[in-house]
Each structure stands twice: as C-alpha cells, then as structure tokens.
Amino acid sequence: MRDASVDSTLHLRGARSEWFAPRTLDELLALRQEYPDSRIVVGNTEVGVEQRFKHAQYDTLITPQHVPELHELSVSDDGTLRLGGAADLTRIWAWLDEAAAANTSLRETVRAITDQIFWFSGTSIRSGASLAGNIVTASPISDLNPVWVTLDAYFVLRSAARGERRVKACKFFTGYRETALEPDELLVAVEVPPLPSTAVVRSYKQGQRREDDIAIVTACYRIDRGDDGVVTRARFALGGVAPLTVRAKDAEKELVGKQFTDETFEAARARSEDTRLNSSHWNNLVC
Image 1 (cartoon, rainbow, N blue to C red):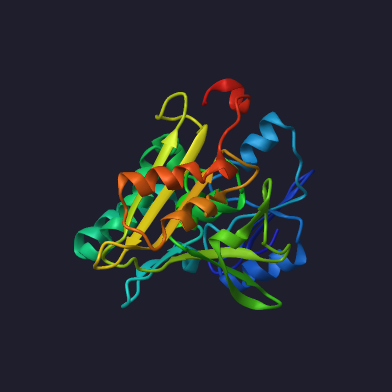
Image 2: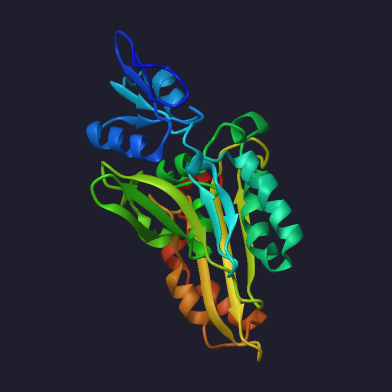
C-alpha cells in the first residue's frame, strides 16, 4: 500500500482488483493513462449495479472524489456555467438555484437543468451520482443528456498525453452507450453557454411514474426568437426514441425563420417522424 497521507494517492490492492484514490488532477490523468481499461467510480450508482447484478469484475477502480478541481462550480463574467465532473447532482441543484437567484439571466438555463434533476431518482442516489458519470454512461433514456444537447453545452475532456479538448454535447454520443471519449480521457467539466434573453427552454420526463423511476422518454425543447418574434434557433433533443440521445432536426428546421404559432408548431410536429416511437416501443407504454 502506498502512503495514505492526505497529500498522496491512496492505493489499495485486493485479491481481485486495485483501488486508487488520487488527490490531484495530474495524478488522476496519469492513472487513467496507465490503466485505460479502469472504471471511474464516484457514487458507485452505476458500477455498483454492474458488479452486484451483472456480476461484472473490474481489475482497476479509480475514484476522482478527492480531486478538488472536479468539484468546482462557477459562473464566468459572460454567464457561462462550468460544472465540475465529480460534483454530485444534489450539490449542483442547490448551487444552480443560488446562482439563478443572484443572476436572473441564468433562470431559464437553470430551470431546464433542475426540472430534470428534481425527477432524477431519489435523494440518496442524487447525492451520490456524479455529473460526469451520468453523462458518460450514455444511457439512451438519460434524464439530463437531452438538456445538455438542447443548451448547446460543451463537455470538457482531458488526458495526460493530449491535454484538454471541448466536444459539443450533440457530437459526444456516438451509439448505444458509446461516446467520443478516448480510453485515456476523462470528462472533467460541463460548460453551458448563456442563453439569449428571448430563449425559452423546457425539459420533460415521461415514465410509468415520475418519481424515482427510469424514464420511458425524455425531452428538452428550446426556442430562440428575435425581437420580431421570428424563431432564430430551435433545439429539440430526445431520449428513449433511439439508441442514443438524438435531435429532431427536421422539426427544428421547420420552425426557423417563422413566427411560433399553433400552425407552425403543428407543421414542425408533422416533420418529426424521424423521432416518433413505433407501437412496439417499451411494450406499448407510449404510443
């Protein structure tokens, strides 16, 4: 066992696996480079299920829980939110509410995020689940991933070998539980750019019950309008209708350049066949 003092990486070796708890971001990235097949564990809400119920076995487990940079939450001068990857969802929720109370321009962004966190599992899971873990799991029925796509968020990725890069949320999910994350990279933060003052964003979850249940479908919708009321940008992201989080791009295009009315909304909805559920989806729970 290595020196377990507060300033050094804790290393525990068991009969079937090793556990590392680095104290700095550089140490964490070096370990990820050395052990690219390791599993990153914060709240153990995903890995624990895999080990207990799927009998998964991992040779190397690494926790970023003690790396201060990964817990930082901040707002830049231009209103960009930066949320650390290891921060738990309960803390993020509380911090976002405080940020929106102090800066009214953040309220639309914050409401879209916290409306989904409110329905996310229960208090104990929210208080353990990390932001990055929820994202990189890449569940097609993720509560939050449609929100990041709709808000044009960037995922900040970092490796020891290549440094930092930023990937738009809409480009990050590449397939069923697959992402653009390289084996030696970690998702260290999420950056959410400010919304224009005329933007309206709403997020939704549909399940057999809303409280403490997995989703059947999730969605986040955003409309930006100019001073004349004409739609300048539309973002509609959905989960549960495909193997990954997707955008209803045809519906988005239908609205841009038009007034947002009942008629244009119905026209956009008619163009959303690419994201429509078929009658067999989830045993006809949604039709």
